[in-house]
Image 1 (cartoon, rainbow, N blue to C red):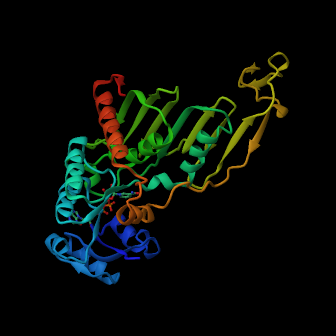
Image 2 (image 1 turned 60 degrees about the horizontal axis):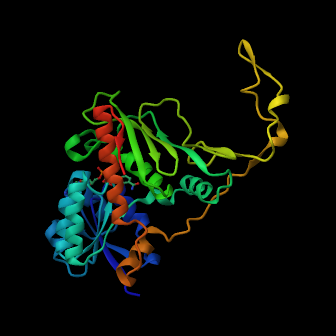
Image 3 (image 1 turned 120 degrees about the horizontal axis):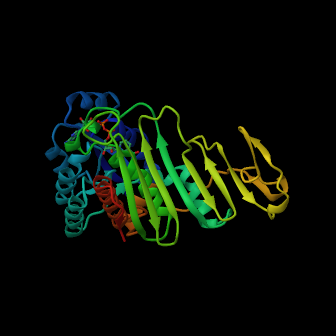
Length: 350
Ligand code: NAD
């Protein structure tokens, strides 16, 4: 099989990770070089034994380069993607794919015109915690899920430099937000009916240091998607309720619990518990024989890995796992979240 030769554009945190770990020959792809505008990063790439290119033109003029991976600050994705596509290269682009839907429309149009593959690296579709929740959603082990809360919270503020700046597409909604919203839309097979949201500016940056969004879906699912960077105490990564139970996944270590209702709760013979300075039957735990705890088991993705799928899309016309219509919908949702937060209104979405 003829391998797809990649050049990594942007040898920072994520570009380095793609070059050293993600783009693997076993998937039919390989890195043949690196380009970065920063000479110091090129030096690092050389020390990591990569061939380096000094200019974008030299990458684009190199006939042995079949594809590029764009891992630069968000505001540079569009220009780089269009230049690469016009030079006849396939493109893998880091998230958030573009700054807004208008930019993405332009890029998709060029990809179509040039008959080249343009695919976005929504890698968190393969996260174990997400796959477990998606499995609960699909298999209905705790009944139909009707409430899904997805959060990531940290206390280190916004990292780095460009992520603090609006002009570079900074802020947490475009950063972690795009991952969590992509997961939610990939899982819940229903239109998003309404969107409400609030952005956080605790740190005083010009961009959001976090946000909370409330989504209602046509099938009745209500979701909360939240990102925080000033949270010294974290809420669980996932909290979901189904009609026959509930689940918590606390963190990426997959700690948590899945509780399934197995028997009838006897409302008439509930034993009250002491709660603070009072007694309560309502908040007493259900009797032991009414529930069971299910193990949290890793769930394998029922779809191919990212780069192998990319190879298949380019060589065999396979269906991409990350479709451009999907990333477009997520970007549209992000725009609706910005709007809902700014107007402090509930937005009708789909
Ligand atoms: P970074 O600041 O660590 O690295 C960016 C690199 O791009 C730097 O080395 C910089 O010199 C270089 N660069 C800037 N403009 C350039 C240009 N025009 N041409 C060539 N090189 C240029 O940033 P990062 O954290 O690696 O993020 C890069 C991209 O990857 C962002 O879009 C980010 O959202 C995404 N990202 C994705 C994930 C993920 O899990 N999918 C994780 C982190 C970052």
